[in-house]
Amino acid sequence: MKPTHIEHIGIAVEDLDAAIRYYEEVIGLECYAIEEVKDQKVRTAFFRVGDTKIELLESTDPDGPIGKFIGKKGPGIHHLAFAVPDVNQALKDVEEKGVRLIDQRGRLGAEGLEIGFLHPKSTFGVLTEFCSE
Ligand code: CO
Image (cartoon, rainbow, N blue to C red):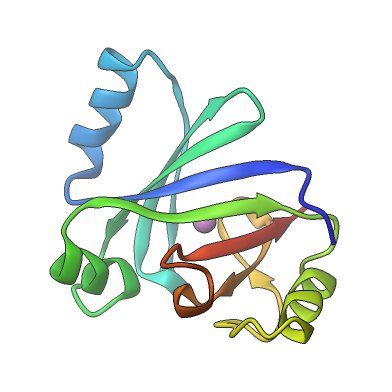
């Protein structure tokens, strides 16, 4: 299992529209997609910067994962996503190395990617995602 690049950085925001304006007007990136992921109770917005994306996450439910995160820690960097050739294989490999998983198997995430999360208790406090096309 070897990641090829940082696929995206997930950032929890309170106001998606205001955050989109910031990334467009201040940072100079272009939002190319806005997508609601009902399963995760979020609205997402995507920006490309090289091979990497910025994924803004706005909660649609205070009890959803992003709602809870913001309630506890406030807005900010939420997770780091590595592109890997095969999510299920990558999850299996790190589990064999003693890492605790959130997802035992890959599932469908935003943009039709297959995704799986590692537990931040096992990853030095960084919620870590694997994703593959
Ligand atoms: Co993500």
